[in-house]
Length: 184
Image (cartoon, rainbow, N blue to C red; front, side, top):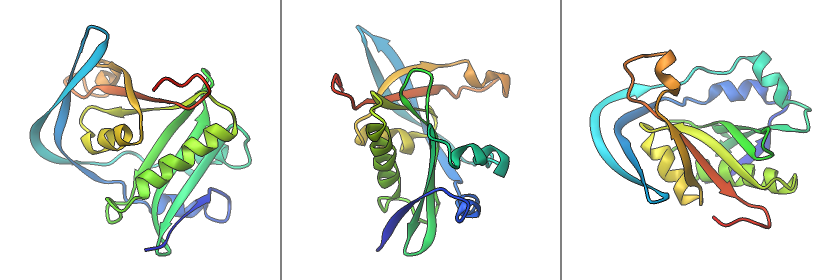
């Protein structure tokens, strides 16, 4: 198994759209906050399939030749296996805006390799950490972020109600401090 990661450029821009990021949701995290710390438990839900909207080429152009944005594409045995888009956020943390691993390449180290790439990018820029947002029903992604050292920093139970007033989906905000003052 040969896993490589390339910087997103004009030569591989079309590859970013070849990632099938479809995933099955069969559980969600229930969160509570007590005495300064989060508690979570996983509950099963009726399984369904989810896929996020793909970024168009115009949106992706800001990740090309821009010093405060970067994109990475993972290849597994020469096949497109995943993608990650990261930028410097207003709070000086690196913000992972998108990470997807192709449905046929999961559980083979692709997501972890992309996360390491984003952390290295942030460290090279001397940023204090990396942050990202995911949803309470993307349990597999949450477990990956935890295993990479991220901690839950907060949640927003209303963020997605503009799209669906009945949703129970919550936005979860994950952080990894990497600077000299890192305490995580």
